[in-house]
Length: 567
Image (cartoon, rainbow, N blue to C red):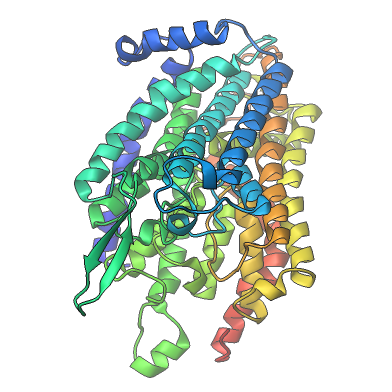
C-alpha cells in the first residue's frame, strides 16, 4: 500500500465515522415515529398510506405477528416479481423485444431480489426489459432493504425494551424505512451519480460510430436510479453485466469512492441507532470500531496479495507486478481490492473487478468476509442483527469463562437466546456447505471454467454468496442451469430467513425480560477488552465452521501457484 492508498482509506473511514452517528440517530427517530426534518414533506403521505391500507401504526406486534407480517409481505413480493419476469415478453416498456425468462431463472432472480441478494445468472442489458428493471427489480431493491431495516429495528427494540410483549409494528417500520431513509437518500445519490456521468434515460439503445468506422449499439436505460438504491440498500445487482466496472454505472474515481461509501453508510449508521435506543453511545462506538478494524485488516490482506502479483508475473518482469487481470486500469489494484472488500463485507454484491481473477489468497479474503456472517458493517439491517447474534455469544462465553451470569445491557442471556443464535448460524452454514458438496460431485463440474482447486473455489464462492445474501460471483461459473438456479435460490432463502426469523425470536424473548441494574460486577460490553473478545468470537466461529472448505479451494490453489501450477 502506498501513501496515496493510506490517504484514500483514511478519508473513507473518516467520512464514514462523521456521517454514521447523526444518520443513526435520525433513523431511530424516524422509525420510532418521532418528528424529523422530513415529516413536513412525508408526514401526510405516511398517514395517508396507513389510512388507505387500514394499518394502525400504534399496534405493537409480538415477535410471532411481526414475523408473519414480514413473511407474508415477502411472499407477495416474490409472487409479483416472479410474474413480471415470467411474462416480461408481453409487458410494456420492452423496446428491444426481449423474451420472457425461463421459469427456473425467473424463480432464482425473484428469490434473489426479495432476499436482498441480487445474485444475477444473466446479463442485465441483454435479458431484462426496462419494465422488469424498474418495476420488478428496482422495486425489490427498495422493499427488501426496508424489510432488513425493519427486522433490525425490531431486534434493537428487543434489546432496549423492558418487560414488553411487542417489538414494534412491521408495517410502520416498513413504510418509515422507505419514506424517511431509503427514498430521500436514493434520490440525492442518484442526482449526484447523474452529475458524474451515470446514464439515466428511457432510451433502450444508441448506435455510435467506432474509431474503426464500424457501428456499435450501446444499451442504455434508467441506470443511475437503480445504482443509487442497489448501493444504499446493499443489494448489488447491476444494470449491466459488468456491474460497477461498466463506465455507464461507475464512470469516475469520484463515483467509485461514493459508491463504496454508500454501501457502508446505512449499515454503519444502524450501529448508532442501537446506541441511541439503549442509551449507550460507547457501546455503539465499540461495535462500530470492531467492524472497522476487521474491514481494515481485510483490505490490508487483499491489497497485499493483489499488489504482490504471482510468481509467473514476477519471473517475467523481474520484479513485483500488481495483479491487474480482471481489473479496470482506471481503478488500479488497491482501489479494486478496496471495492471488493467493501462489497463482500457488506451483503452488497456490486463489483468493479472480477473476483475470479484475484490471486488465490486475495480471493480467499473476499470469501472470508462473507463467511464471517457479513457482520463487518454487513447488509442493511442484517449486518447489525447478525452482529448482535455474535455479541450474545460473546457475553455468554465470557460469562462461562469467568463464572458470572451472562447479561447484555442489563438483560440476562439465557439458553433460549443462545439456542436460537446457534440455530441461525447453522441455518446459514448448512446450505452453503451442503450444496457446495453436492454440486462438486453432481451438476457443478459441467459449469466450471477452471479445473482443480480454483474450480472448487468457484463453486464455494457461489453458494457462499447465495447463503450469505451477497450476490457477487467469481464470474467463472456458468450458473444459469436449472440445478444451480433452484439450489442457489434455496440457499438464499435459508440464508436470509434462517437468520432473520431466529433473531426475531431472540428479540421477543429479550423484550419480555426484566432488566437488572448495570453495576461494576456486570460484564462490560464496551471498551478494548470487549472489542477483542467480540472479534475473537467472530473469527473463531468462522474458522471452525469454514476452514476445511477454504483449505480445499484458495489455500490449495495458493500452494499450487507457488509450484508454478495454474488453473
